[in-house]
Image 1 (cartoon, one colour):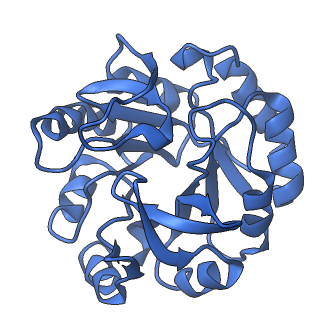
Image 2 (cartoon, rainbow, N blue to C red; image 1 turned 45 degrees about the horizontal axis):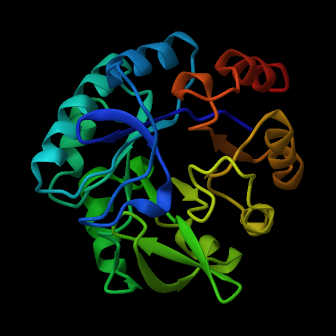
Length: 259
């Protein structure tokens, strides 16, 4: 189990937000806005040897805010070349550019999950451009009627695709890793989604990174237990790096001790 650090960028600033509040034209609920640039965070992760973290551009592609996000992303990828993944507005046209900037992988959601369904032809496009070994599928979910459905468009639009171990097994042949945000608890610090973790634990093959609701070291230990040490995790709002109470160095030390 690895600690995969994050850098979330919104309107050109490193932020932590409540995941479900990212609607167009609505008010985004911010937990934290940093006065440090994305490159500083990436440099810290490099210093600690934390690979596989992700940079997420939270604004809509094509907007001035997205361009500001992109400037910060370039700084982060330059600071830790080959050490971080990137997602947000990635498609077959720009995916290779992100690798050229220094990303190890591109993370894709909306381009692949289009009009409510999986577009396997688009996965093939991405595999042709960047290769399976550089592709991460974002399977972030929201709960509806007792089931977990993959959501797109900055977690606002439900697809018809239910997250199941079988779906993950099928998709594992098409990508290198999965990133899964538990959107219902993302950015809330109210506790992890153990029911979702149980689904992720049944998936075999590709590495999986879980995000959402982590409050402290007890939650991290629960992730280890449910995932049998195979599920990676990321922590956002609760980290002291982002205004929270959970010491970053304590998380790094706890994970490296048990590797």
